[in-house]
Length: 141
Image (cartoon, rainbow, N blue to C red; front, side):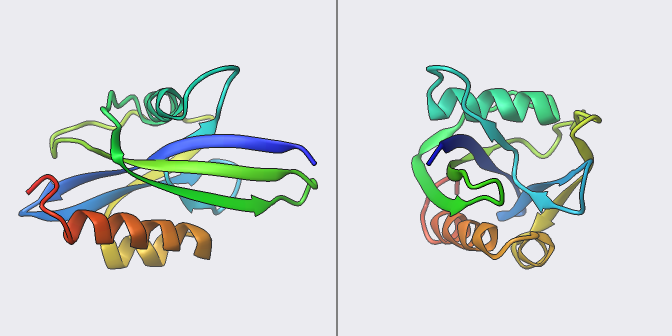
C-alpha cells in the first residue's frame, strides 16, 4: 500500500485572548479544512507546513512544534494518508491572499463555529486537540 504524507497547521490568531481558527474551503469541492499539503521529496513536516501555508494563504508563519497531531486514514484510491498538523499563531492584522486555483474561500472562526464548519470528523478531532492545547495551557497567553 502506498502511503502519502502531508503536513500543515492549525493556524490561529488570538482576539481578546480567544483563539480564532483559519479554515480554507477547497476550490473543487465543499470541503473545509486546515492549510496543508503533500510532503515533497525529503522535505520535513515543518518545512512542508510552512510552504503549504505560504502557497495557500501567502502567510509567512513560524510553525510551533510543541504541539502536533497525527491523522491516518485510507483514501478512496486505495492509498493510505498520514497527516501531521502543528499550530501556528499569526497576528490579527494579517491579510490572506488565497491561492485561487485551490482555495475558494477562507474564514476566521472561534472554536465552536470552526468545529461546525469543518467537513470531516477526523479534522474536528484535530481541532479539539489543538484547542485543548491552546486554551488549556499558558501557551501564547
